[in-house]
Length: 170
Image (cartoon, rainbow, N blue to C red; front, side, top):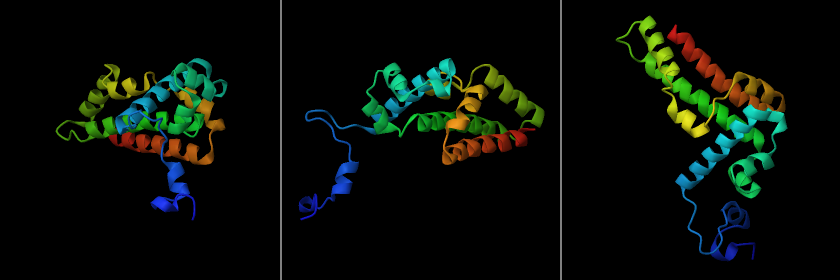
């Protein structure tokens, strides 16, 4: 009988499920989201402090007080952590730009002022709380040479969407 066929679950499907130690409660979606946010927050801090190339997966796991296994359970590696951090931040800013754009009762100048004054007063707390630090342009430039083409494309798509939305703001 094939691996796992006796209970109707193939060996491949069985390996995809997370294995939890006996007696531990099942991992919930909220737990996973919190762990991913923690990983991203610590990674962004280290990337800003040392530069992308100088930070290892071990450094991120140690800073977040997690095991490497936990980090790899949530991400394939450092580049995926970086890409998700950048695309989350850009996505949130894009949503804010679109929100201001939809205030049609305001003039373009008033919408632009509303967006800029909101940004300067720190009205993007959700992303800052999730990530902990700003993702700087220099940090993105430092990381790009180390990313796979699909990762560069994902960052580029997020940047292009934000650029297009900000063009509409003017």
